[in-house]
Image 1: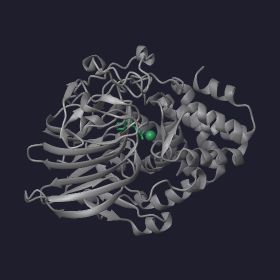
Image 2: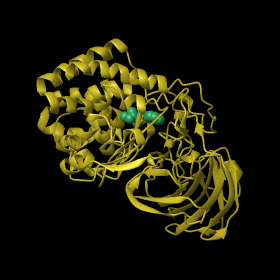
Image 3: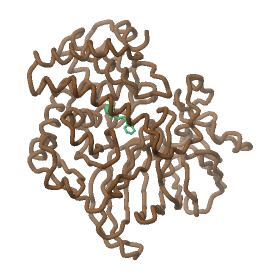
Image 4: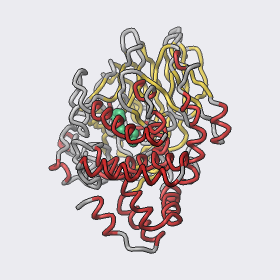
Length: 495
Ligand code: TRP
Ligand code: ZN
């Protein structure tokens, strides 16, 4: 098995590189495609430039929650608790009509506030049930409160909209299409990291504002809908349109970019009893018809993967897990409790390692989210290191060391940029993954197994359902190990 591993690494990187250079799809350039090294000095700070009583136009598009790399992503001044998405999708015409309720709390007095939202036609927008004035500039949706919202006040925004969902570009990649995509069998699916949640629903689109989600998605008879969390069941189309409504619920907080729907003809939600038993939580996969009875063998190792990673990372942070497989998607993404894989990845010999990788993101990335996109190595380095832990779990420590040595060699030949400050236009570059992962291999050697695994578990436990920073992780590493490590980290992350 381990001999397959270096190959797996290369193929995965090649695939992801391919995903990042697809040119055969229309990409909509979004207003926030302004990220550049220059964007790393933002003048907006959370909560201060969020609204203005007299010049809403002037603030629209320039406010933000304070992301250094993508300053227009996310908004300050309020905190979303819950999104309720009511969608109707007609595959034949690619029409989406939606009504989204957003429950939030003002964190300062507000006369206006922004959501991130691009595309679609808004037919109706209410604030606390009363029609509200709004304006759209780029992907900033500015809503005016006729009666100012007071700090601490809870409010609900409802946005009704319709249009044709589709793929969008991202400032984080030179050329990649994400958002709402379509596969060759007509399957529809959302992949939105880091900034495409706002391309299908209005959101405070930044991992700093996590929230719970409820979905009701109506599709024609014969089609099925997968999403995050718990499948609550189906009902005949509550709008009486002859379709069928699928209800899903994510009751643990989630960054908007991890929200997803998968809409496929004949897709089925299949529970894996063996994996569920081993993992101690339901493992359910949302599979296309041809894979329902013919899923790749390694998929049935998901339960063992959960158990193995729990030994290193601590308890699995959510109450269920599973994956879905779609066509025309040359990559994988860790959507919360429902990771998504392209058919090419799922049919490849390295599927096993990508499965472990996306599973590891449930701890590092999803439960513990980045506070700044710049710190993305906290997601990708950790998930990449989990691949090595799986090798160790399967084949023992000597084989693990061999794999680490191979990766060190491959990484030094590749001459990657350091992972601590990735280019904002190439956020998911090989250095973030490989050098980020190898940093953890080095750290384990530096502080020893006991401190290292304590550190991983404490980091996951203390930041559960929250956000983490690189500096916070460094400080914790010093505390747990009793060693001075700033220089160790600085040299591997920054210089
Ligand atoms: N986080 C993904 C991974 O597991 C990579 C990724 C980031 C991605 N953005 C994406 C994949 C958008 C597909 C689409 O490595
Ligand atoms: Zn990843």
